[in-house]
Image (cartoon, rainbow, N blue to C red):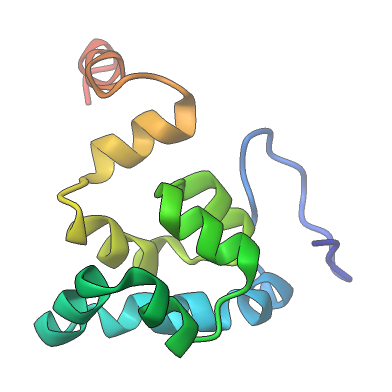
Length: 117
């Protein structure tokens, strides 16, 4: 989404600004709901119904279905709230980092080790 106050371009990133926050409000609200174990269980019982409950857009719902973090970010997802979604499926930050860099998790871990991280 084009911003009225453009941020510097950083290849491979989606800056989370006020406009993107508005676009992602329902998605982030849904992900915040995953603080509750009951809500996580409800989501896992019927993901489609749970997404409808929060009125997600089709791009947001599609990204949830495929667990595609880059698409979730582009659809207005905030990384802090998306971590709650990823946790439902046992994904950790290395899984997310691997997805963002197009590497396997093992390749991403090796890159971190090589960098001394």
